[in-house]
Structures are given as C-alpha cells and as structure tokens.
Image (cartoon, rainbow, N blue to C red; front, side, top):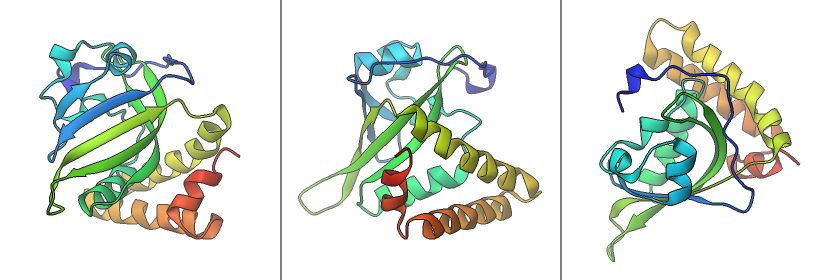
Length: 176
C-alpha cells in the first residue's frame, strides 16, 4: 500500500472491546506478524502487511511527539501504553490503546517489539484527542520539523506532569 495514495476519510472502524489487535515487528518496526483482528480492522491481508513498516497504518492526525515518546521507551527496553489513532487501507480511522513491549534476547538486546492493541473507552478518546490536536498544531506551527517536534514533546511532557506526575499515571487516569 503506497502511503501517499491513502486519503483519510472521516469514517471510524470499530472493533469489539473483547478483541485484541496483535502485531510483532523487528527492531526497525517492520511487521513480522499481524493477527486476523489487525488485518480486518486495517482492511489489509497479511501479505500486504508482512515486511511493511508499522507506520503503514499511521494516521496523519497523530502527533510525532507521541511516537517519539513510544520509540524512546521501547528502544530503552521499557514497555509503554499509548492512545493511537490509526488509519486503514481505505483511509478510515480507528483508535486503540496500545501496549508495546520490547522483545529481547538473553543478554537484553532488543530484537523487536510486540504490541497488543485494545479498543479504548469513548471517554478516553474524548480526553486525549484535544491534547493530540494541540500537539499536532504545535508541530505544524514551526517551519523546522525538528523544532516542531521538540516543542510538541515539551507540550506533551508539560501536560502529563501537570495532570498526573508521570506519563504512566497520566495514561491510566485518562478516560476515567
């Protein structure tokens, strides 16, 4: 799927609260495994997904700061939870609460990543979406992409520190 060919549409794909989207990637984020729920929700089959970067489902509404935070955590060998808005092959969107963990060898070297994605609560989405809109606007306000990312990251950190003290607490109190 050519990423540039996909145009976002304002149609949501929903999946069951009891369903789990599962994916496994190598250390660079290329998809090695995608379960049937992932394929159905992303509107792709496994042949289209395997070997592709996980960013194939990235929605343009997602701020880069969230992905920087995610990558910083997992590359450091830490798990992370994050709200993510993804995009299907046809441009439809779907929200997940992602739990991403590194897969390591016996020496602790990161070999890849494992993600379990669940359907978040409507309140969680309603709580996080204004922050994500603010982060995205901050990124777009700067001509230099690096400056925009740095400013957005600072805004994200300020939000979770002022609301909860830690990022994990912030995520788990969002939507309550």
